[in-house]
Amino acid sequence: MMKADFAELILSMTMPPGPAASIVGDLEEETCARGTLWFWTTLLRTAVSASWRAFAESPLRLTGWALAGVMVQLLYGIAIGVPISVIMNHSNFGMALLPGDREAIAMFLITVGVAFRFGKWLVRRVPYRELPVFAIVSIVPYVFLSLLEIWIEPPADVSSPVSMVGALIAASGAIFTLAGIKRGRALAPKE
Image 1 (cartoon, rainbow, N blue to C red):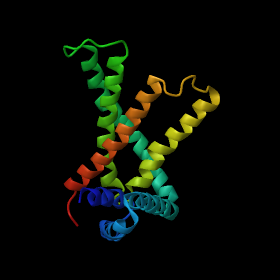
Image 2 (cartoon, rainbow, N blue to C red; image 1 turned 135 degrees about the vertical axis):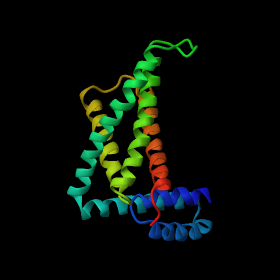
Image 3 (cartoon, rainbow, N blue to C red; image 1 turned 30 degrees about the horizontal axis):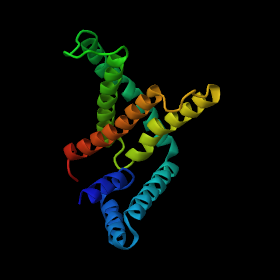
């Protein structure tokens, strides 16, 4: 059941809940014969296809919302980041922290806080179109900057702790954006 709920959440970020539930139901029926891997790959292909269709229907509108989303994330980052930075700079929390630990902890807290608030903002502004806007805001710049970094200066060690921390922070941002979307849906008035 949890698999179906998560799958519906993913698809409902690209289409209304009725069609999303129907598609997930159809996929679940086929899962016994085809397997779990087939279920998730088909679900992701469907979500990407629906996202592309939503973007193709109104590219300027969704790009505009994505640009607004960047500004909202910046404002949330300031609103959440300043207090966290002040607290982190004035307390050890009874722990012996290595150099850079405070910054990493603060960055993680700011990232998850901003991501959660951004997810709730997406639900209010672009219902059932959250995934394409999230992709424009988060995934496209991250991939572009990663490719640019590799092109300009290839990393000496791909598995360096810095790149691993960055990847973990980015993944936690995506997870908390999903959590914000789910929470925003729970708080939204029912239609």
